[in-house]
Length: 449
Image 1: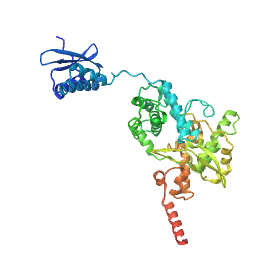
Image 2: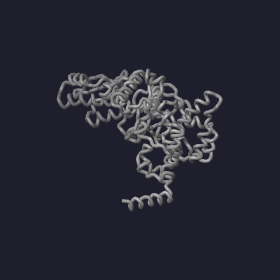
Image 3: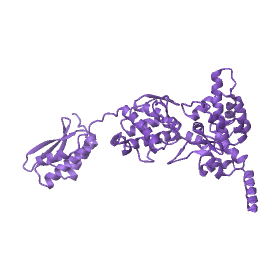
Image 4: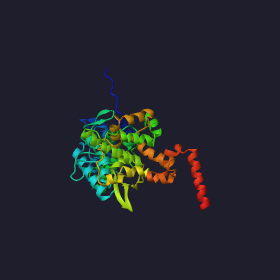
């Protein structure tokens, strides 16, 4: 004998609701011709059958439940004729849920262009074109971009059109999203390791984008039912958790590089090579590396420099770094050692607009890619695996404390981060000798006062 097909849980739930919650065993809901059909048996034994305006599918379970509940209330509680009760309920009922067409990719990409205009020209949250082009990005735009670029936009475009995207781990085939949840999942897959800062940055920018698109600021470019973003702090589940390997990697301190080793590295750059392309590229990287060494810059910050007149020409960094819910402001830059900066004419080179290297995959990756074939760099990495492009900046911080004997509260703003972050990063390098010198200076100052 054929076995009876078990009822789906949502169907059983509806029938339990009618029988137990409404307390009516004379009402039955079934599927007929793909639709939900309500059967009602009256006290005199007669029956009536009503097709509800919903297809027989799980997605409509709540609407079916509320429809039956409304009919029951009007007919049983208010003593309204069953046909009239049905028609009243039908007039006020929400429409049957139909499968939604995926949002046209062009709508999403055009919305990004409006988002750029809003963030750069209206709110001024991202005032630097270079900052926008590298971190956010967009399509080619006269006077702004000569090509499609931006860490977030290039990934967003690949996702919304369902294209492939090359990551360090290999080629990822993206699936075109139908809602914000899909978008965050797909963006996460191509935005770095789970738990990484890079993935967090990309997803944070996508959250800002969707928030703009589903609110009055954009005149609701995207419908909120499908594209509302998670609340602030709600991207954690998409960001993911760091692997044990990444946790250990990020917990280890970055290695510094001695002054002698830094000079040796600079001398190794082929700025006098016989080949013009090698020579020109070396000069671009010569400027980039020297700026990081003398001013303690993050790799990305080489693209956000300007010269301002403050008694004399001084370098300023306009880059704003996101840290949690806050963003660090731009800052005046202070050279350590000043004689290196003067000898290398760094302010002059920035002022006249000397070319910096292109870093299409990000500044840090650009440094790594260029230096990977440098023999001096490879010697440094062989001696200490924690030597990375950020080591130039780290050497600046160590130099400030070990050579110049500077205080934490002074060096932290010079490097563009908080005192708390600075202490966490550099306290392990504070020696007894440094503390003795600090105490001696403090006592001398006290006597002088």
